[in-house]
Image (cartoon, rainbow, N blue to C red; front, side):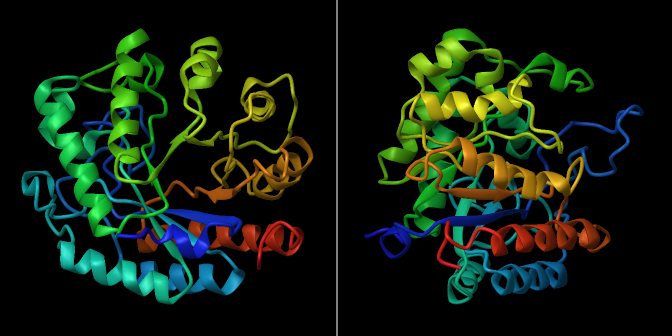
Length: 319
């Protein structure tokens, strides 16, 4: 089957990360965690009304892509045991994907396989790097690619797999050195073997620049991230944009109102100055909130700031 990318191969990406499942953080309610959303729940946290509202707003401001974090929010036919209460059926997912396409929003799947953000895998999150784990990952990637009708990209996550990010977890899993690379490249192969381009968060490069640039395939689309307003090249997170450019990687920088909404327009300006046009493939907005009614203001604020960024950079995209 020819992938959906054939219709949008040259389009500049203005994407938004939306969550079907938000079970990607801690495994329990730690008293030192102030966010009410970080602990995984056995039910779906998702509001249909807000979902539809955000899709219409995104289309209205000129965005053209949705990165949909699926997690345990789908009743996968290959592994139905993963689904939480209220998870979408595969039929419902296909209907929503078609709705997005009709609105001019290209749907791209995301499953985060970082051990810091894989609570959605349930018991399999405690069986990392075992034959059973590999089989589950292979099955899920293949099924999702089929459900999305061979999408242009597949976001694998892979961020923050470090002890400092799991220090409040009851159960900690870390892959290091060659094991991290073996598992990562296994996932990349599963995606590429289906004719789809892998996409990841790039923060592994912050702590491990030498192995990153020695081993990271150029075929993997990179989304570095930095969420503050001041773009100082002495800051490693900022410098990573230029380092990725110097090594010839395609990039989709991440924008967010996680710390300040000023980051959204600031990232666009910085990327335009420091990433060659042929390698700057677009931008990815990440509000980092579940798709819930009480998070409406955060989502709408992010889209509003991106609208201003899009209006100021019309030469970058077909908007």
